[in-house]
Length: 162
Image (cartoon, rainbow, N blue to C red; front, side, top):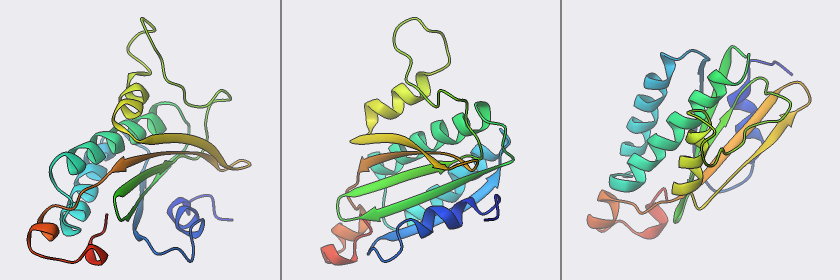
């Protein structure tokens, strides 16, 4: 498997499901967090996701993407959005993780670790797993999602991305 094909692996893991999907990968550099946010924001807007669902998804993406950069040594970060009726899943995959993996820091453990605490606070559920031996770690968060403009314009529920 090509170690640079992170987004493809994320998409392949859910082949055959009836979800709205969007995936991309970017270089694992701090300046790419802003680019990832812009890409996700544009996609969410095209899906009619706005307001709190939009803003929360961008917060989660920023925290997960930043963690992938800060805590791993890979050169790419894969991102994926999955949407269906009532939920939006934000997934980030890196190319390698520390042996302990991501963790939430509580109390006075310093600045680091607060990002996952935020993700935990705003998500219905979140988790992490090893993508495959030697390929990295996947961190995901599931958010409630209520379509914005689509619902007000009379679109049927089957047309909503989430």
